[in-house]
Image (cartoon, rainbow, N blue to C red; front, side, top):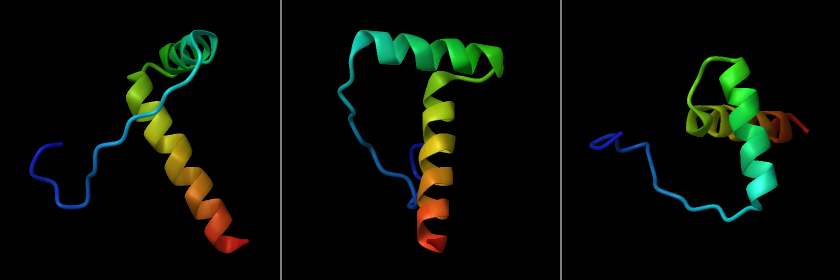
Length: 51
């Protein structure tokens, strides 16, 4: 997403088992695991804004 002014780079350290589970879930949805993580984060932020 180079050149997108609304995009930032972040790094997240997690256990291998958690990452493997995220990859399995992303595979079920036929999407890259990075995109699934971004979607989950965006959804959580939006939900918490309403709270």
